Image (cartoon, rainbow, N blue to C red; front, side, top):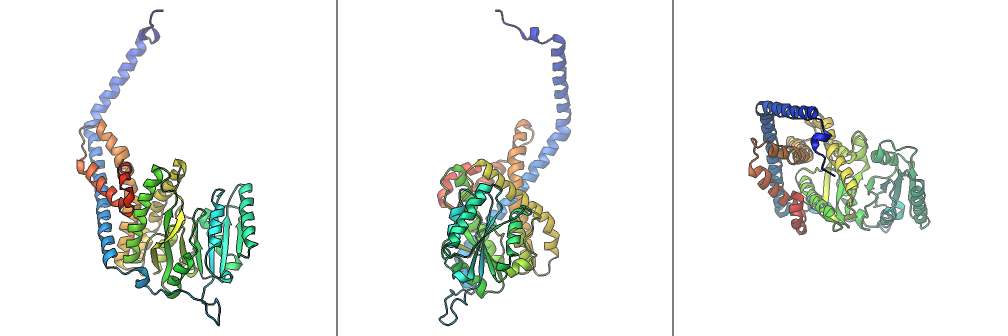
Amino acid sequence: MAEISAKTLIPETFQGTRLDIAGQIGLVWELVKAPLIVPLLRVAVYICLTMSLMLFVERLYMGIVIILVKIFWKKPDKRYKWEPLREDLESGNSNFPHVVVQIPMYNEKEVYKLSIGAACGLSWPADRLVIQVLDDSTDPAIKNLVETECQRWAAKGINIRYQIRENRVGYKAGALREGLKRSYVKHCEYVAIFDADFQPEPDYLKRAIPFLVHNSDIALVQGRWRFVNADECLMTRMQEMSLDYHFTVEQEVGSATHAFFGFNGTAGVWRIAAINEAGGWKDRTTVEDMDLAVRASLKGWKFVYLGDLQVKSELPSTFKAFRFQQHRWSCGPANLFRKMVMEIVRNKKVRFWKKVYVIYSFFLVRKIVAHMVTFCLYCVVLPLTILIPEVEIPIWGIVYIPSIITTLNAVGTPRSHFSSLHHLM
């Protein structure tokens, strides 16, 4: 059969119309490109380069400060009073304060046994410890499994309580808030929080609580996450590199210089009085942990980060879980900054340089600029400059600065330097 030509299938009049439309679009593009598109794209390039420089300077500053902290600063147990808590022969366990351990859960079928077992294994006087499992699961089968596990530990003499709610109002913040309202925790002075995939070591409380007992101005003791599945895939290795920088540099510098950093939502011990003074848990953003930390800091409370107090945890190993986590971590801080920036500026209890650190370094650069420049420069502006060759991006803006930033990010995980290229890409 003879080949059927395009003219047989498409009428000549339609072909002419199509060519006319394409020509008109091309003409319009040429008319608006030079006077409008090119100048706007140049402005976008300048903005992105400015944000890149802000991020570069902040990373460089943090790198210098962490070196000074490691060389000249005292360790937390030297900066603050720290003495181990011991049993008294006469008063027994009265030297140990009452502590509640909260484990918020939501359909955690894979890890609920590990987290509950680790919490029940904490070395602390049994009459001074309450384990509170806050189960917001929507799957009845999983609820039954978690409740059965709690009953199993209760049969062994552990003071463990299984709590559910009629609804999930406030999500995690709502569950933690409701948990502290229970009558059996009213006498507790401190609350340790561990997400369902976190497993603290038995001596966790004995190492963290003394900072709170002996220093009345400390509200939070934060431990470091240790990732048990970091080598599972390339995505988990790159996450490990990014989060290790967060702990090794950002948390360490904030704790040493300003006694402030963002609470990570887990693996930390709070003074309940500080939570109450700051206004309690609020669900106005997706970063309830950071929200509480900022409000407590504005009340004058101090935070301590312990890099050697490590808690086992797992990294998201699927793209769906990773995407959900990153969406929460990128959108929540920007929303919180919008709500609190003026409250920070007007605060009288916080010194000027701490305000600068919180507003500029903690919020603006790390939580907003870092995410914006990654998306705008590499996903929007750079592809457009390929389509519009009249606009160029200097090589230092797309190669040198990102390479240095990525190298500095790998400081916390020396074995992950080989992943820097993947992280950069």
